[in-house]
Structure formats: C-alpha cells, structure tokens
Length: 139
Image (cartoon, rainbow, N blue to C red; front, side, top):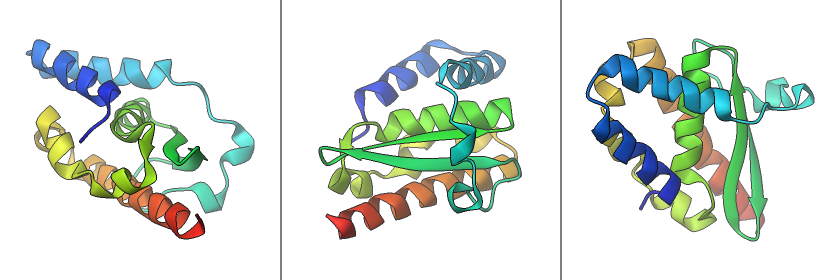
C-alpha cells in the first residue's frame, strides 16, 4: 500500500544492520529534502504534539497527495522525509487506507525512537490523515 519511494527506504533499512547507520540514513533523507519556504511556517501549518517544531503543508495535484514539511531538528526532518515517501503521489483516497503505523513498524522506528519522537511521529501521521480527509471533502 506504500509508495515506491517508501519501499526503497524499507529495502535500504533491511540492508543497514546497525541502528546508528539507519539514523544517519534518516538524517541524510532529511538533508536531501528541499527547504520549506519560511512564509509557510505559520501557526496554521504547525503540527501540535511534536517536541520539535514541525510544519506540514499539503500539495494536492491531479488528485494525488504530497506535502512539504520541515522541522528545526535534523532527525525529525528525516522522519518527515520518510513520511513524505510513504504518502507521496498516492491518490487522496489511498492515503486514508494506508496503515501508517504498520508501515513505519516495518522500519523498526517504533522500537528505536524516544517516546517524545514517537509521539511526534504519530502527530505527523494524524495530521496527514486530517489533511487528506479535508482535501477529499473539498473535491
């Protein structure tokens, strides 16, 4: 159910045995993301429930879901990149069908993130569901 980009991340994680290497990979994914325009970093786009500052803005084109996001923490920026890969270019209806917790569990992140980071990740995933559901209502 996940996108091809997420499947590539999952395959890379299978190849990387050491969790330090996996964390480095997540951080590199975050560094590779295009920066989010500072004008989009407003209270309305801020994700509540994250220890770090996190912003997400949906980009719906031709019924496909994408978003831009950013954080002031490198590991969280990397998590945004992973989450973006999970949902990138899926049709809006498919976004709501993704079992995000199960997909993220495939990476083992649920076992290796602090409770604050896990809560923040859940908040990001909930925000995506809300953004997709709202976009569906507007169609």
